[in-house]
Length: 109
Length: 121
Image (tube, rainbow over all chains, first blue to last red; front, top):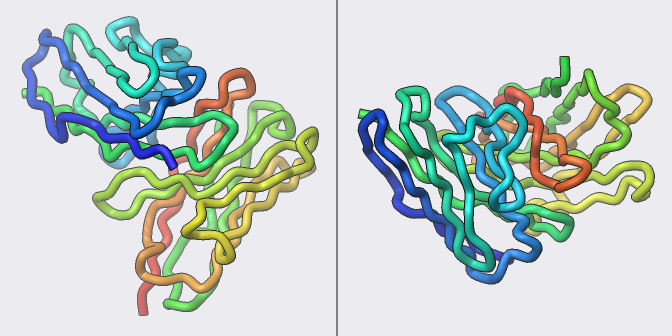
């Protein structure tokens, strides 16, 4: 089973700044089957990025994903107050289990 | 509107059973694999299992830790997904989400609002 480790655990930044969230995998993630989700309090997760770097429908271009193999990054530029949320990475695809990282909490000051 | 809506959660005693449902609308449900994910209070996301589509013989996969207690099924004629949970313990207390698997990439591209299951005496 691939274990995903996210860092940092919590990130506190100001509006307009850039956030860099990391996701490390214990084994190589094949075909870049790596996704990022945003979850706001009391809400369901929402798909942001799939295939490590492709934005899901309706996601603003402030959100970008990069990486391959075992190291992946979610970058959020020009932070806005509504970006406050917990962000999860996930290894998905067609060979389970489809594990999630433990999450990074992003706070906008 | 494209959506999935979970139902069936509630309070259940330890050792009891519960059947959750997920109603899909606004898309061709029968084309998609569907998954269940849960989230214990204040914790992260945990993948529960998957059921494939008819073309893939409705094959299922379940997380190793839940195998034997949790069973996934679907009814394409009703556009519905189900999760049968048996021998419940307090560790099964969580919000349970159903999620649609994207046809072309496989990420979880549509989530319901979740249904809360509380296991307590």
